Every structure is written in structure tokens, then in C-alpha cells.
Image 1 (cartoon, rainbow, N blue to C red):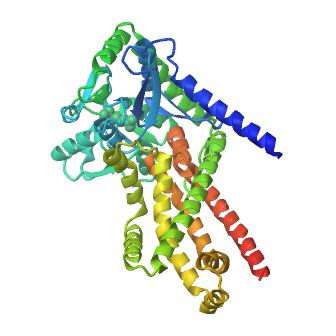
Image 2: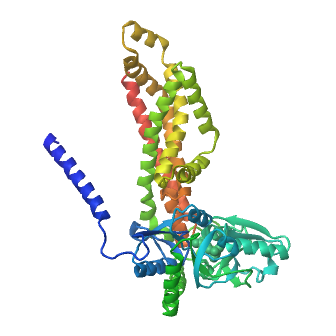
Image 3: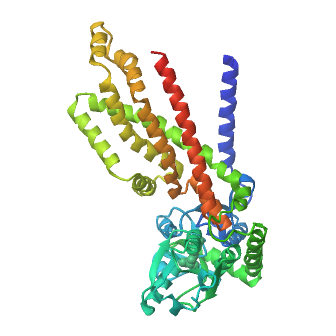
Length: 499
Ligand code: ARG
């Protein structure tokens, strides 16, 4: 490109960027009635038909009963609705940390929760059920004696199951993060029954005809309400709109839309799927076929993630390794301590710490993707620093002495003589590190980054199946790693030839 057109392109980009920022800050026509233009709602989209991912045409959107209600309230109170997600057991902590404005997740107001958050009026009633494999003899709570029972972590179903366990002997509780995982455990017969709300159970049952459910008497409070940080000024206006919606029959209309449509939709979907063969490998990839583009769209993020982390990790690792061989004791000690900490603790823990502790410590609400890249850079820098240090030390001493005696300055020698040789020595180790990073990138799915693994989980949650999307994601990881391996061995061959 000619120089002038370069300048022009950059200028246009800058103007467009500034324009976008200015426009987004211009006051929009309708004034919000709640003081803030945009409110963030947090939900746990594993709960069809309250909230779940719709993954049409490779796109994803959180939809459902709760989302429709939120949109209605947003229109009435004239704010812009933004939706974020987390596992159910992370919802209340997020409200307490004031990270979001409200939570809608089919959440039941309980005295325990009321100590930590505020609730709106209840907008919908639900009842617990026991879900079990078809033909099972479990029809009432007393039948749960001696059984393994699945519940979602942090829900009232968990509390209720504990209450039941006080009365019925030998219940073994299994707490899982997401409802689809419970269903999968049930189908794999690793649990004998699960306690799930009726509205949710219906959808899962019609998608999985090998399951059945039966309603049980309430153990405590039930029904759904909107949750807010303690003392939030939103409670009153939200409750007012909810009450209007109930009075006008709007809630009932939405319930009819979601609670029957989802049942029939799931049932219809299942009717289309070829009957699963009994026994053996009963996999059914047909049902996730329309969602494959969606899963594939997780690839760029996974790659971006890996490449950025390797890149910065390499730079950071080089800095650390230079500190280590600098001969300056305190610097080397710091670098060594750093390495030992990052190699001595689990990566998963580091991710969670960076993501959850940063806002608390610094007040900066770090985005999940950034938290991931940061952690991976810090972590892989520790590993790479050792590799690089080894690579540098392995370069023949004679080379260094030769360069020195020729009067080559230290930094030039390091950059032009030592580094290129060291790099070639450590290439296999770097490829290993990159492969690990590529696969470990799946760990950021735990903080809500929708990369490859997370995309597969979303499809699973959405289609009420768990196994097939995961298998497919596994295949993609494998192909990516193979491609990387081939590319690396080509590079190595070429480097060796240039000797
Ligand atoms: N109503 C139950 C509770 O408040 C379960 C809600 C689960 N919601 C979800 N999105 N997974 O504990």
C-alpha cells in the first residue's frame, strides 16, 4: 500500500472510532425512569423455558420467560436491557458485589437469601418434582430412601433435598452446577433421581422420553421473583410493573407462550429425531446438526486466546528468564519466587482469582476474556521462563566468548547470537506449551467466555443433551492440535535446513 493511502485508512478508522464513541454518549430520546440508561440483568441460562440459549444460524441469544418479562419492564421503565450470565450459585455473590443491577433466574425468595439481597414481588409459582428414569418406583419423597439424588448447587431444590434427607434415611445428595448435567447424570444412572421444578422438568421429560416426573409437596417457599442488591432503588418500580403485568394478564400470556410452547417444541424436536437404538452406543448427532455452526464459531475465540497468550507469555517469559540469568541476586530471587507460585498453584484457581478478585481489589470490573488472557500470560510466562532460561544456557559458551572477543556489545550479542540459537533449541518445548494453552483455554469457559467448550455446553443445555456436543468439541480440539503439530514440525525442519 502507498504511504498516503495508509495515512488515509488510519484517519478514517480514527474518525469512525471517535464518532461511535460520541454517538453512544449522546442522550437518547426517551429518558430512563430509573436514573440509569442501561441496566444489567444477570441470569443462569441453563433453565429452559425461564432462560436458555437459542442458537439459531450460528448466533446465540438468551431467551425465555424471564427475558420476556425483563424486556417488558425495560420498555415500561425506559432503560436499555443488557443480559449477562453466570452459574446459578454465582448470582447472589454478583448482586452483593454490585456487579449487576438485578437477577432474574427463576429465583425463589427465601429468608436466607433475603438476608443478602432484596426481592420484588413473586411473579410466578412453581412446584418441586422428582425426576427419575422411566419405570422407576420412586413416586414420593419416602421412596428416596437410600437413593442418590441430584440437585442444582445453590438452589432451593438443594435446600429442600436436605430437608427431605432429615426425614428420609440414607439419601445421598449430588450437587451439580447446571440442570442439563443433572439430566445427563440421571440418564447415565449415576444418580437415581433428581429434584427439579415442574416447569423445567416438563421440557426435559418431553425431550428425554426415558425419564418421568412426579410432583412432591413443598418443603418451603416457592415461586420466582427478581433479586436486587440490598437497598436497591429498583425494587419498588420493578415490583410495580410486575404487579401491573400480573393484573393485566400479561404474565399469564407469557407463561402460556413459554410453558406450553417449550414442551411441544421439545417434544416435536424429539419426534423428528430417529429413535435411539436401545443399549450400545446410543449417540444422536442428528439433533445437534443445526447447532454445529454455532459450536464452530467458538474456534476463532479459542485460537485468538491461545495466540495472544502464547505471544505475551513468550515476552513475559523472556523477561523473567533474563532476570534469572542476570546475575543480580534480588532480581533473580523475585523471578524464581514468581515462577514457583505460578507453577505451584492450579491454573483454574488462578483464573477464578484474577476474575473475581480484581474488581474487589482494584474496583476495575475486569471482562472475562481479559482476565483469561492475563492469567494465561502470567501462568505461561512462568513456565516459558524456565524453558527459555534453559535454552539460553544451552547455547555454547564459546559463542558468547567469541562474540565478546570480537567486541560485539552485550545486547547485540544476546539478540543476534544467543537468542536465535536458543529459540531453535527450545522450539519443541514452545510447541508443547502452545498445545497445553490451546487445550487449557477451555478453562475460561468457567468464567463465562464462550469459547469452544462453552459453545458445546450451551448447545447441550439448549437441546437437553450433553454428550454429543462435547464429543464434537473434543474432535475440533484434536484437529486444532494436530494442525499445530504439523505446522511446528514443518517450521522446525525449515529452521534446521537453514543451518
Ligand atoms: N427456583 C429455584 C431457586 O430459586 C431454582 C432456580 C434455578 N434457576 C436457574 N436459572 N438455574 O433456587
